[in-house]
Structures are given as C-alpha cells and as structure tokens.
Length: 268
Image 1: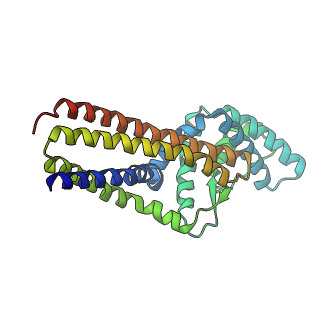
Image 2: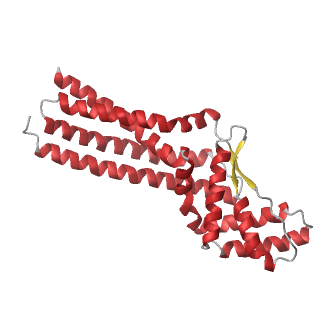
Image 3: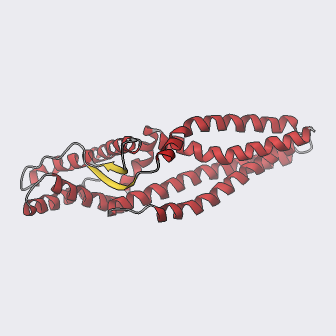
C-alpha cells in the first residue's frame, strides 16, 4: 500500500512539474512587468533588430512630425543614421527599457485590439541627439505606437496573468508530492532516484514541446513590418533559449538525484 502511494505521489509530482515549470517561466518573464523588461533588455544588442528599429524610428518620426514629403524624407535620413549609431549609448538602452515597460502595459490593456510597441521614448532620445543635424525642428509625440500583430485572445492574457498564482500552487504540489514519494517509499534511495528520473522526464517532455511550439508560433504570428518580424522572432527565440536553460538545470539536478539515489538504494 505504501509503495502504491509513493508511485501515485511520484506521478502527481511529475505531472505538476510539467505544468508548473512553463507557468513559472511565464510568470517570471512575461506576466511580471519588471521581469519582462529584464528579459527584453538584451534585445537591443541584436544587430538585425537595431537596423529594423532604426528604420522604424526614422519612418515614424518623419510621418509623425507632419512635414512635407521632402522635409520628412530628409529628417528620416538623419534620424536613421543617428539611431543606428546610438544603440550602445546608455541613454538609448534606458529609452529601450522604458519602451518595453510601456509595451508590457499596452499588451495587458484589455481595450487594445492589437499588440503594439511604444517606441516613443526611443524616438524622443534619437531626435534629441540628432537635433543639431536636422534640417528643420521636429516635435516627437511622447507616445509613438507601432502595431506588431493582432492582440492575443483576452482569455490567453487572463491565463498569463494567472500564472504567478498557479506557479506558486504548483510548486507546493510538487514539494508535497515529492516528500510523500520519499516518505511512503520502502527504499528512500530508489525513491530519490525515481524523483531524479522524473525530473529528467519533465525536462525531456518540455524540451520536445518547446521544439514543436516555436515554429508553430512563428507560422501563426504574421509580422506587419521588418521591426515587428525581428521583435517577434527575438521574443520567440529568446524565450525558447531561456526556458531551455531552465530545463538544462532541471535535467542536471535530476541526473544528480538519480545517481545519489542509486548509490543509496540499499538503505531503507
């Protein structure tokens, strides 16, 4: 009876982990505003995104200023040159982070009909730096929204916002089930090894699921502009890499638990 209880607890722990690990990642890097800003901080180091962002800023600044076509084109050319040169400037990085903070808030605004990135802080910073080289004075709106793609279904956003609470419950379930697996087992060493194998199983299942989900997301999320495409690709690729790093740590912990359990298998 104890052995059966230990097996049931092991199954509960594994299933809960398969659900909780991705939920915890989403809670940390997507649902939480600061977590999202931290997650996207290094995006601005990507060369292709820098080029696309420079083009997007120059186009939007030229059109937002309401200038004649000739003046707008001249302004856009100067802004594009400065935007490409300022990517390493600390002020540019701060503007990028402010932009991502605004973007997070816009994403979870239930009145929004599409996902938009607010590049207003970046445009303002670039125009300020480029002001001496502009042919005419340019006023940049404090908010400059760039449509990226249609906003996710409100139910999806609800599920994302629920992940912090769900992940906490999941961690409790995993902890209790793992403890019961050890307590109810006749051989604690084998039970520990079983938990290690369970961690390896969770890491493997989620790794395969990630490999399947990434191309699906890219195929089903059309990009409106070059900037939108680069932003989408970075979000998906970096999310996959980040989650896989978590899974690697989980797999290594599982391997260590498996080896330790096998070494202790003879003990009750």
